[in-house]
Image (cartoon, rainbow, N blue to C red; front, side, top):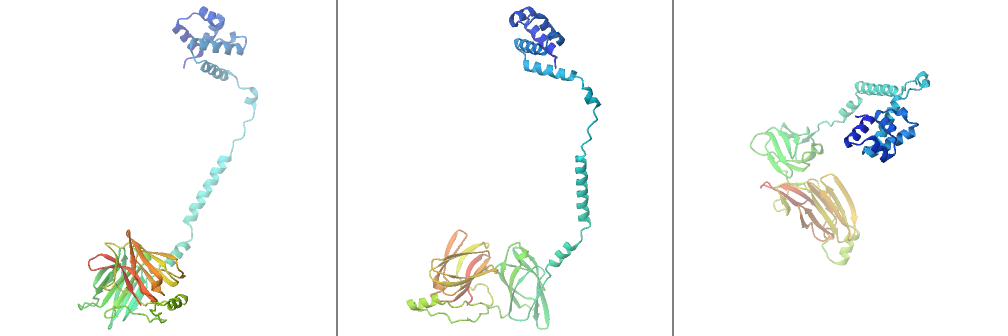
Length: 379
């Protein structure tokens, strides 16, 4: 970068201007103009004159006078000697705070490393203790309905022989390890199984509940011995109300609803079961209940969330499910049911006036490979 004098002289010569002409135009004496270009600042009677003449001369030549003044101040600062008292003063003690902070951080890091290296294995031991151990269920006759997890097994007694069925995988289907080899059963599907190799099916296996690719939820299997695959009906614990449509009879039913019936087992849908929805794959659906009168209703969604309430006229209940819903109903005519799913809304008829109803709404895989949402009466 050019010095102050060089910038002034170069600009003046570029314009072809003499000191006499500049003096006539600016009233700056010639000796001060020459002193500025020679950077002989001692010629000025004071710094105020120096700065004033420098600013005026720079503006006259079209230079940036602020830049010239800043350059002069920087030169002056560099030329100023350091005061003697600063040279003789004891230096300030070094600030040791950053050193202490760094040392503290190092101690913390070392402590954390040692903690994890020498940490007792109690957490791992506790976690291992919480790992679920496989369970075995025995079946000699009738029906066995249990929720199985990977590694769980059913021991089937046929005569003097025992055969083991073990749940190997739970994906979009249940994979069972059987004496006849691995067998896959999908949600809502029922398959016959010959486990002793005599050519005659010994069992029927039905997948009643399964959450796709969530093995921690398990799979609900119903295993029925040959000849006992039909649903076992539960005896009603109370006499259903009559079908009388008189106001007095209706009022009696609403004021004292009959107890609901608890079925003992579920079963695949019969051939004549009504089809509410049909799809290549099951999907979530909603059962909407609109109450036309007083009614006691119990429901269970996907075999886990069971609830029970007494509803009054104009109440509305929505129950969501992935696989199926079981309904216990004290007065079928007191409720209007609709199934909502797949962009469709379908009315559901579960019974007549005063009927005590236990019904499953569930996805079932048909022989054609499609899933159908059906209703199955259990009472």
